Image 1 (cartoon, rainbow, N blue to C red):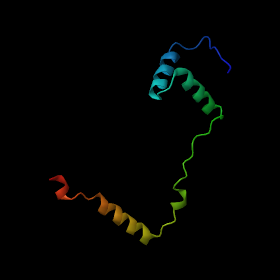
Image 2 (image 1 turned 45 degrees about the vertical axis):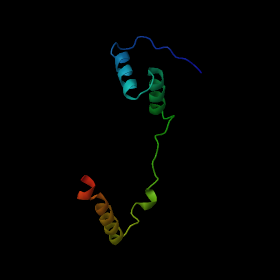
Image 3 (image 1 turned 180 degrees about the vertical axis):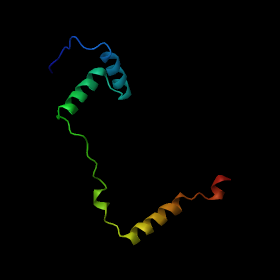
Image 4 (image 1 turned 90 degrees about the vertical axis):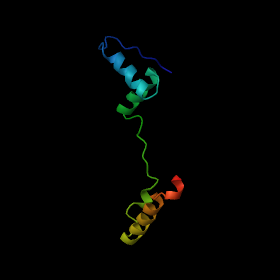
Length: 82
C-alpha cells in the first residue's frame, strides 16, 4: 500500500478529522481513506432495494388489511402488565 504525507494543513483540520473519525468509530487513517474514496467516486454508497418489489404493489384493500393487522399487533393487553 502506498502512503501519503500531507504538509501545511490548516491547524483545525487534525482535530476535526479526529472528531469525525471517532464518531464513525474508525481510525483517523481509515476515515480519511474512506472519505477520499467516497468523494473521488471510487466507492459507491450502498443501495438498499430489498423491499422494492413490494413498493406500489398492494391494492388499497390489501394495504388496509395489512395496516389493520399491524395495528392490532401493537395493542398490549392489560393482563400482560399484571
